[in-house]
Length: 393
Image 1: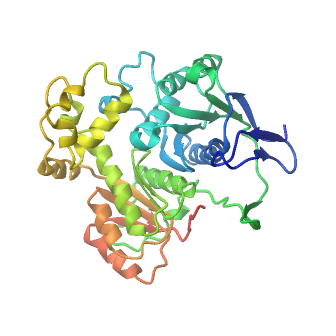
Image 2 (image 1 turned 60 degrees about the vertical axis):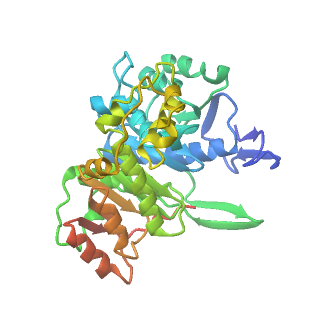
Image 3 (image 1 turned 30 degrees about the horizontal axis):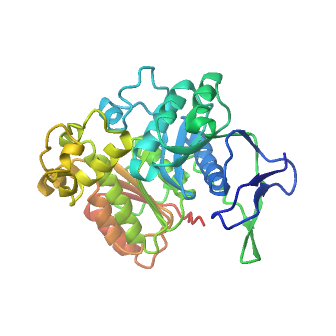
């Protein structure tokens, strides 16, 4: 197939719309549903991300995409009992495969942003992964293949209209890519840089030069994720999964703050008070996500006020105080942080430190590199200059 006609483009008024190949056949096959323009943008970007994560780490990978940026990305490490509860997968009766764990992590890192996502899987979608996907609000999935059991499960979503795309894992695009903006054609070499070895960590200007293997793996996850995140972007990673992504901000400190706040929320969701919230049995996962998000925030009275909490909880929960939140966040350690370009000021390091960052990989090359290095040294942070910019637009 050389082209697929679409319902419309980014918006309903943008017609006609299609995806097509100038030469050869499309590397994708629509097995079910009718993906749209944005669906295909998310699918093709997220597939590249998970394919590269698998190649760099050797583990199955998954991504949760929204509006051409990842809400979450992860590799298939086992889940603790706490994370199973936080990600709402503790009730699954069948064993969670490595791919299912990767998806649970990718979807669970920022469940608010992942609502209505497009999913990418590096490996054949199995029954366990499909079982998790079926329960979530999602637009579609792309994978190299689907087991018969997984396909049967996914085909039931959205009354049989769930978007299921199969991609040829051997497909290699042309080295030169083009796109049009306002009738003008842009052309450039594809960003085919890879992070499969440790050469990216060779230039370490900080006093602390120690990068354990786990830190290197987490930084690779961060850098590959940033490669497919709308710039400016910053990514916090822990235990093989992105826990905070700041995308598309004009100021890098705003990226660092946004991603850091998301990382803090991810950690706060593991606080005993949050894990013990007495939700009504009839409350759905999306409503629980919303309630947790508000409960953790400064607007907690919006879910704890009389006349409101009764719609969410069996009994009124205690407030999670600011002191409790600060104390809990301080216990998050050994977080890795990647940036798609250099940090211009040390304030980014100050903010990262407050969210437990211990290892950093950034491009370097700022006229204020000395200030950034000094700030990292103040907190005994190991920082590598990658000399690689990862802007994505």
